[in-house]
Length: 416
Image (tube, rainbow, N blue to C red; front, side, top):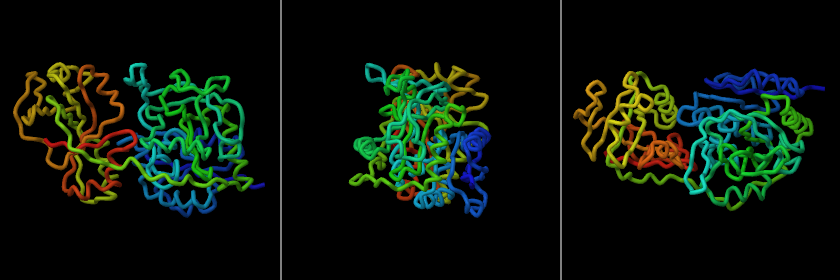
């Protein structure tokens, strides 16, 4: 009997191909690595796709954003419509969510956001990058999706900094639950699901670990079943799904309009604002620019790390090497419209013209754990200074979604 053939798409920065090939071959598949710029002709005989671990494009911009906007995904949407199996683990899950294939296949409806745990007082803390073992359990019917045909619990590792399923659509999660699309949740060894940080260490909504599309043939999972034989049942389920020719048993939820649309509001400047540039080429800046230029070819981008302060702590922060490295970075300061440049040798500010030359946008994550970590009144984010572009072009939804996922961040217009 012919073994199902799985393609493993690989982008610059992808690093899990060996693990992926080992588990697929061990569980009854043939497989090969498909590089993002290979000919689509190589995919004509495949039965499915496995988007594996990171870090595609080094997570520049945000995890999965750049890869999801590759021309390959027009083809992937068509393959999903044909019923081909498409699974994504960790970075692969982030790519599937950013592409819109998860959860509904139509647009950007969720985010795998930075790990964040809510404290009892309503504030948030960041656990940072998580590299540990967790338990998961199927949360859907056994035959609901390509990877759910197993029972009990599974102990597998996680390794991510952005693994928290979130959405600003208040109705989406409940509709996914009604349609049995919440495929996996975090649990303890006995299968008890909990949002407690000991069980769900990334703070994911409802302890969600994985979600499938309405047809069940596309699945995004944050943990790594491919990195241990404990996870073999996950892939054996895929093989059985393909061999039985399953897909398309469920309908898409109806009545869900798209939320998370952009309202780019004018930002009220903070009294003390720091904009940090890199001295050497900023590879993240260049990659985000390339992603945006797929839509606006003439756009030029300058990226800054942003910190806004309620009180004057500029000298304190810029003198701290863990915050600012003068050997690699340059710091500009906005004091209520008066622009300065930080002189690290003299430990003083010097006058200079406004360095922001274009339409400047500020992306801030929700919650802003970076600001919380600085103490006092502080806000952090990324400033995108967009040049050679009009506001009407820049504020198009597909362009704004390059800079910001509205389900996990805000985008504001800086008036400098």
